[in-house]
Image (cartoon, rainbow, N blue to C red; front, side):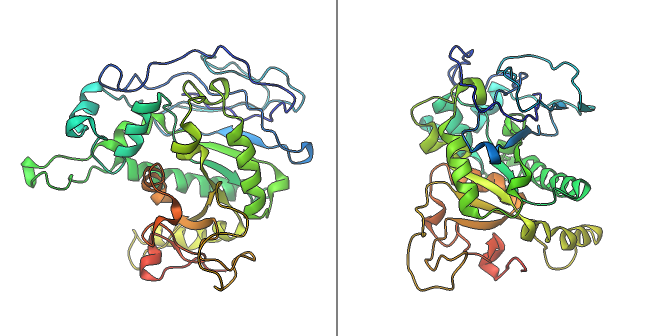
Length: 353
C-alpha cells in the first residue's frame, strides 16, 4: 500500500463512485493485501488549523511521501495505483511484502461462525462483517515541529513496537502445549492492512486533548470510501470501528518518555520496563468526563473518566481490538486514569511530568 502526505483541500467535497471490494469473509477469507493508496483527505477544520495528514505504511508496504500545495484541487483518490514523482517526494525502498491467505483466516475462525480466535480476533471479525479493511488509530502530532529527527525517532520506535506485537505468535489458550499447540497468528494476518495516518500541523503544538478531540470528531464524521477506502460509508463503521472512535495524540509529555525508553533498549530491555507513551482519546466522551467526581483534576476534569489515557505504543494493537467491542471506560483493566499508563497502571506505572 502506498502512503501519502498532503495538505488537504478543505473546499473539496468527497465524490461518489469509489470502487467496492467484497466483504472480508464473503468467500471464506480475506482478500489480497491492498495495493492502492487511500488519499483525497478533506478535513473540515478551520483554515487556520488545517491539518496535514500523512499516511505512513506498515513495514510490509511501500513507503511514499507526497507533499501537496494548500490550494490543490486534485488530491489523490482511492484506487489511484502507483505514485508518480512530485516535488518534495521521499522514497524508501520497500521491504518484503506479506500476504494473507483465506486458509489461514479460516483456520483461526471460531466454531459456529463466531469471531476468529486470537488476540486480534475482533478486528478480523469486524472486517468480515463490514467489508472495511483498513485499521489503526489516526495519530495527531502535537510536538517536536522544530526537531524533525527527534519526532522521526519516536515514530520509528512506535512502528517497531507495534510490528513486534503483530509478529508475535503466542499459544492460543486451551489448544494444548508443545507441538499440539495452536498459535495465534491474528497479528500477522492483520499486518498488511495496518494504516499509519498522521495528522500534522504546527498549530497543534501543545494542543489540549479537547482540541484534538474536536478535530478528530470532524475527521471521523467526514469518512468516505474515496478518502478512507471501500466500506468506509457502512452504517456501523463509526460505532464499531475504533479507527473512527478513538485517536492517538503525541504531545511533549509523551515525547519525553523517549529518552528512558531509548536507554532501556540499549540495555536489551533489562531492568524495570520503560513505556513509550502516547495518549489515546475517546471521541465520544462528553465534555467534563464521566463517572465519579471529586478526584485529582486532570486537565480540569475531576471525574474518574477523563476521556483519554496514556498507553504504551506497543499496546495499541490489543487496545484497538478491545475498543471494537468495549468502551475505554469499561473497567480498570482497560482504563488508566492519567498520569497512570496502560498496561503498567495495574502495577502503579505513571508517565513522568
